[in-house]
Length: 594
Image (cartoon, rainbow, N blue to C red; front, side, top):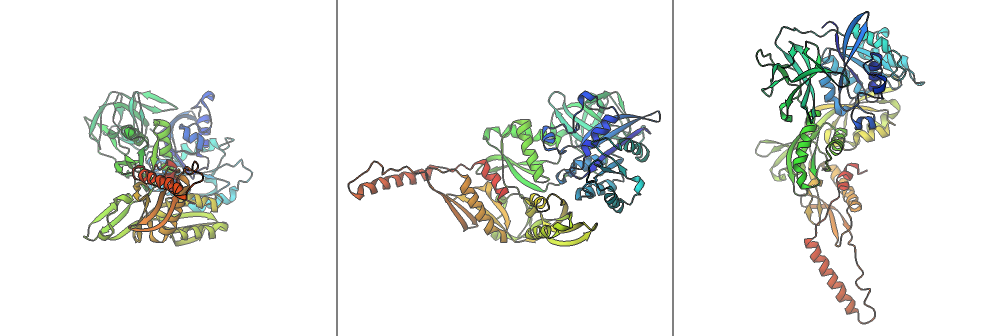
């Protein structure tokens, strides 16, 4: 055990964690030259294309130092605020963390939030200054920021470059000398924390775990405490670039178990594995994930509903932060109401459903959950606008607020403040980290930042503002339900809950946008936005008309009128039986109304 080190890499998005992880794998010869490519741990196509990490990946490296052989378990984590749940799981499986900071950008919001997560779990922090090879690196300035943040000395900060490999020796040295060895008793009853799982169509479900106490051997009978199910440990092993089977794993080891589990519900991330004969107690301290954004996901063909359910089950295994429950809609049929951690998370899930499971889906307008106080004193939680009770039975509606931390260059403070105030934000505090960088703290309603806040923030600050948030309770709000009617029929998938002050301009913009997107039919289509029974905006998609009077020349005007009346009757009859198809683009356009 004294030669095992478990550590993760935490940083803001794009500070070079995955590239540095590549250098560590090369240096310890974990990967041969043939298998080497950029960001080797980002195994999904999506991660490679977008250059972001979505899943945390674990890998074991063997390293010889002063003639001693060490086992280093590295977990590479995502940096985007939407995937902070992945980071919290990885931190729970480690004793130390490499905190990586870009020498050209300095400390950003996610750096701070991930650092606090690590400090809460008492991890040993090793600060690393990355991208030292770039000409615009400012190591002295950023080092002062790091010292202010974590109170270390100048000597503790390692200067490195993921591209050139500078500083990799020093990092491995620090991991061995500074990160404590795992504590644990090999003789105690088995306790292993499950921190991830994947689905393999041949072997069933593979669970990844870290052993705190006890030992596990191949063919042991084990039990998962939360689900109370018992299995035979068919194969156990450690994670190299692939799976490497072993016969025995002890305290501090990070490994995997295959026991022929077929159904997704039987493996819960954060569960504890123990022995059937000599059971241990469950491990504490693993929080349930709280979704922030809710949206309906529906199959385009109604008969694909069961396939979509199976695809969601398998995705949930791989991404425990996805939650879903069945719901139905008058416009779209049967589907699921899904909870996501944010908009990027929603986009990634939609894309993974298409790529990995060939499922084409329609996603409705995302919204957040509201608490509705009824006149009879009861409290309801509402996840989608169609579930809103009638206005006569509502006493008041509370909406969720977040505490947002925004770090930006001082020249963009005015623009960032305007953006937050437009979104009904309240300034809590403003302080300068250095002469050029300021931290702004706002309380903002979560519903306001769901749509386009992050994109706007990036564009007004030229990419220099970084943003991080956490929940901050509920407050009363003046909310109304905005419905969209097509030819007097309500399209429930386009309904939104919106603040009263924003309802009128939003309804106008929505009608104009839908007029562009809905294809012309043989009859007029009226697009209306309504609050309750009051219509606040209207646009009309004109009918595609055939010139019926073309063959009528000369003669009396009544001949022409007769033909037009006949056409009018036909259009009227068609309008009664015709229905309006709303294209998928229309649901997505609502998100990008500006």
